[in-house]
Image 1 (cartoon, rainbow over the protein chains, first blue to last red):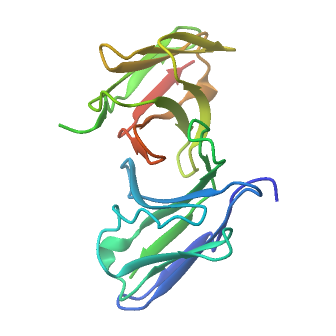
Image 2 (image 1 turned 180 degrees about the horizontal axis):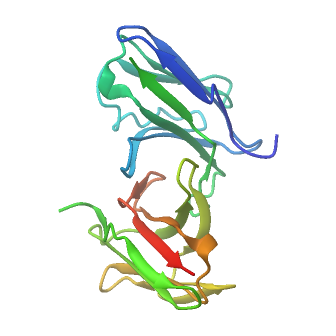
Length: 114
Length: 110
């Protein structure tokens, strides 16, 4: 597709369950980013992938959070043993290899932990 | 001190007026600067980006960058009710990670 695609668009799950969020970046974009946005708050950086380099995981809030990027394209963000404070919108963005190019966002996954 | 700071607003402007939004950043090595617009319940969409000191105009939007003073601003001319949204300032230092400000909520009143 032409834009960043995220799925599911909404996810409701019980506390303690694991969830997987998917991001399909814009074709040809080598950089992929995950952010989290809590209600009424700004964007919180989680993790960044660039090509085959080791990801920048400096924003992951705990070891319950992990992410993979297979084949340099699709990425999966996994949250284990979810907690209520994990409720937020999880946004994925991608950009081209040129670091001056802007990031383009997907529509996000709204995660609600009951 | 936050790395990227914005006034949370709301900034209320009458229709047809100029809305002026400011953003300051702490990392003097920051290279590129972006303004995103975010409607309620939607994802951020890019409005403008600027790399060099001075002004950059695109339609009704003008971005202004002053690296010596470490601020970047966004002017919206002839504000329309459809401009009502939260505007996010984002700054890129070394590497590709963007740091976002908390956003300024803008309300354009007819």
